[in-house]
Image 1 (cartoon, helix red, strand yellow):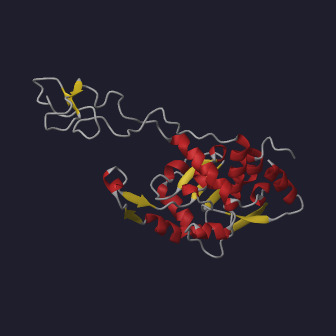
Image 2 (cartoon, one colour; image 1 turned 120 degrees about the horizontal axis):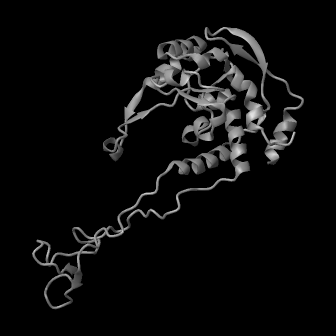
Image 3 (cartoon, one colour; image 1 turned 135 degrees about the horizontal axis):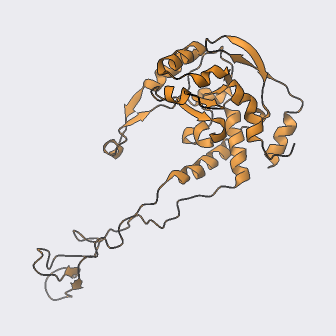
Amino acid sequence: MSILVDLLKNSENTVRKIPVINIEGSKISETILPKVFYAPLREDLVWRAYIHLQTHTLQPKGASKISGHKYSVESWGAGYGMARISRIKASGTGKAQAGGMVPSAVGGRPTHPPKPEKKIYKELNKKEKKVALLVAVAFTGCREAVVKRGHRISENLELPIVIEDSIESVSRTKELREILEKIGLKEELERCKEKKIRAGKGKRRGRRYKKKVGPLIVVLEDRGVGKAAKNIPGVDIVELKDLSVLHLAPGAKPGRLTIYSQSAFNKIDEVLLRGVAK
């Protein structure tokens, strides 16, 4: 929590203005940079929060408790010139005298099966989660971190990117793509179209292709832009109230290219710093 206190102190005597652009890519006004963006850039906090929050999306799984235990078995012991493993006693099944209930036998029990009672849900302190979110937001205003993640942005584009509220009402994919190209993200959208075939067994497990992660658009209210972004590879939409480290730091790497609507940008301190001593 001391990071939050230091954040408020560091932003008291600092006033930085960020340009607001319209859907044509032209500057129309300026707005004051919120206090959140003065948070210290701590990658370790973001990484820890991401790993913990990602476990909240996992589903418990495990083998059946009776898997490989469906027959009555007995070891014959020594003196038969055969292995002394447990053998199935049932006759007339075609499996009589075959090995059973041991991992080394065909149809035997699993060796070390996944267990549904395993604890995979990692708990995270509320204060730590809040600090990690603030730090992840601050990373979106750091050009060095955004470029390091692999995003391609023009040199004359200032971060963080703030666009007028009319973007929240865009409902057509073609129109949204044109807006993103006009503000200087044409090369970034081309990068997101690239995909490669995964190396390994994942190819045959429903995740054949690896895709790029592109811009994130943060809005105060989704009035149609979420539908428009569905068919643009790499582009995601999230409302400010639902913003999470999972959105801002895919793969636990902070610095995702983020576009804020003007109303969401102006409300970011009110929403994220709620409950913090002023």
